[in-house]
Image (cartoon, rainbow over all chains, first blue to last red; front, top):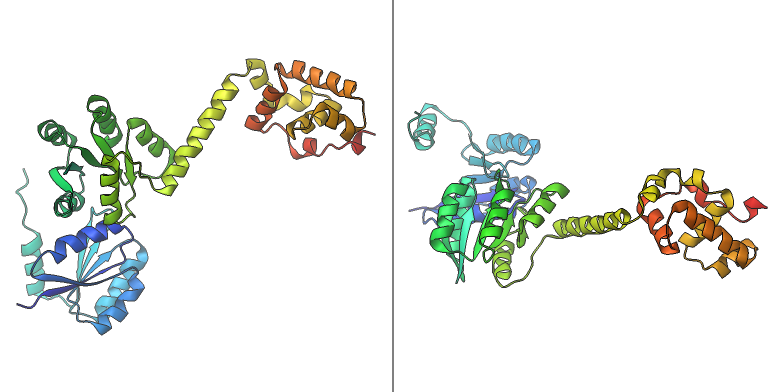
Length: 115
Length: 235
């Protein structure tokens, strides 16, 4: 089965980056292809390698702006944003239709019932 | 093997460090807890060597202090200490044995855990600088506290207390000049210098030149105009 190819970018908090690398690379379905220090390096890597998922540190307003530009250029790319303290995450995907949104909700939306 | 408990209320750190450190020799993770209640139970059950504690958790310093007091054999490594003086010193006083910044790598963290267990002290340069700076300030404050109260209180009124010539001589005392050298510099008799020094010590209510000098070093008593008083200006 083809592995899901991931790129980790713009995570100055190295422990978080190492953790993300460790937990994803250990999964047989996932391969971390590369790690780059800055978001500005991402477009070049995306143009040279086949990447399915970008795991991005959301450290600045620049990250959000770049994410939008990247998704426009690479609409099939899934972007997972992690705020640098590891508490918050966001998912960005280009050109989502009804089915994609339902799938994301079904995958990520399941949780314990609220009291 | 080094038995480690990971304590963090950030899920990805707790789970991630649990997984990664478990695969790292010679570390064995005996607990990964996201609150202090379960962490306390785990401490009692597993007798860890090292606790890796996320310092962004509310109450982390107090927890570290309690562990240090009740279980001094357990070494505490602080992860992600907020880098301001108050938090850093609170951690130091709580008995933290090692520090890891969030910007550190996993290798740095592992090295710190292993080194701390071996009795070494690991600390990012910025935190070490803050600790040493605070220790220096505490020592200086302690010295000033040993000075007579009237001296401390008069610190800001020094220029009103001493005459112009006395200020000039005091300035030269601060430069470390002896009475003989002061007399040469100002072209006055040594006995005259001694009289002025005596008057200075009485007015500052100190017992020695050293105390008088220490007073100024701590309190930066002179402004630029006073320090610029030269021999020629008094002729």
